[in-house]
Image (cartoon, rainbow over all chains, first blue to last red; front, side, top):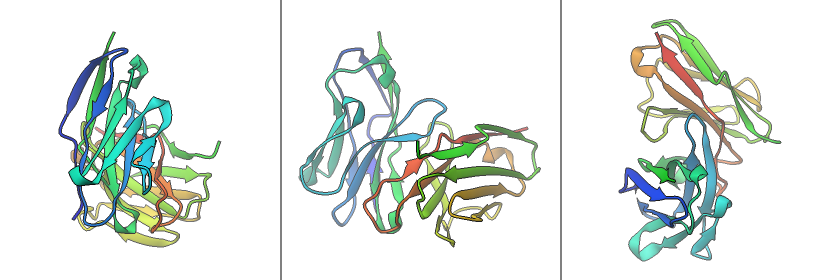
Length: 112
Length: 114
């Protein structure tokens, strides 16, 4: 069965600093991978997705993610964080039947 | 804009009193999902509809039911809410079951149980 692990429950970063969120997945075939962001009291917004091809994927809000098959990772990055990036971030893998398996989430706090 | 709309945003009900949450979409997607998300946890899939075909997750309690009267609307019915059912309920849609299309989420309904 597929699984997703986000090792960091909380990350605190200063505004303007870079951010990297880790995601490791377990899935037998080529995965479809997603990063979603959830602001407090809101639903999930898709940041980016990976299906195949170029392993560096660009998303919205200045985010990018890199798929590394050898490490079973799909880490999310942003070069310079803004206060509005404070939110919870979920990595997810899609398996058969279009079901999403989510990681436990990483809460990002941004210091002024 | 095309979107997934959930009403109400906040719902309060009494212990054991049936409650219905609604979801509508203007994306014309044929798959609709309901998730339960408890505080500081990832969303957990309850069930989904592929057109009129209902698919229940094995560990979804019988207390949770769903209806999809047409393509645009889907309802989540909780027959006898318990305190443990207090959560955020998220509706999502996607274009096809076996495709690489992402799921699009609504803003959720936060359910409180008195």
